[in-house]
Image (cartoon, rainbow, N blue to C red):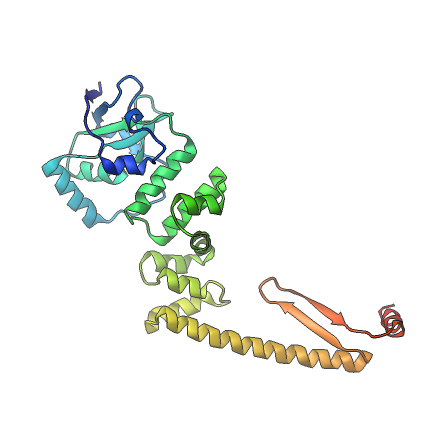
Length: 287
């Protein structure tokens, strides 16, 4: 049977993590106000909402040694496992749980929070990792996307929740559109988020990414190079469009203008006329 410890302080970190609107006095199970439950460590398992997949081995071993010497000061926040009676899923504290296993600790303190909604569980789990800077950029982006796609959060709400700007959230979400190989470069630390943002709209982003790594280019150098390429492409397109406009104008005797949106891959052709006779002439040509 789980053991109950009376009146053990919860600590500032947990109170802050669970939000200002949550009553610290009501964090524990319904039967014992301010009590922490001690349970066997194998009663716990990771929650599917955990966005972090990679745990630094050195940090885990360091934390493991601390736990072995001093115990676990901050309890693990859990909810009941709906598929396994008497077992629990971790909401916050998976890193401590993993380190405790390395330390061969057999029992851990938990706080049972079956009152939490699915949205709040995801929010707490993501916030815990973000506050500790434990997530790589792709895991962070995936966390934001899960809140938006699976829990109907808006980008504005996500930005406010994590005290970020709306453009910050948007830019991180765009990382998920990059090719998988570039994503692996980001996770491995070969490319920074700044590099990724600079090349995200490039037609040959993968080749550009490889050049960045090979040449050790800074973000500013990449932006400068891409701006030169973009300017050249725009000048080339302008020259090509001007040539077509002149050919059309000479054939129909009226001024034409071509507008093309490269990103949306669509455009428009404008034929300018001054009199109704000229409009009739255009209509006859179209017939």
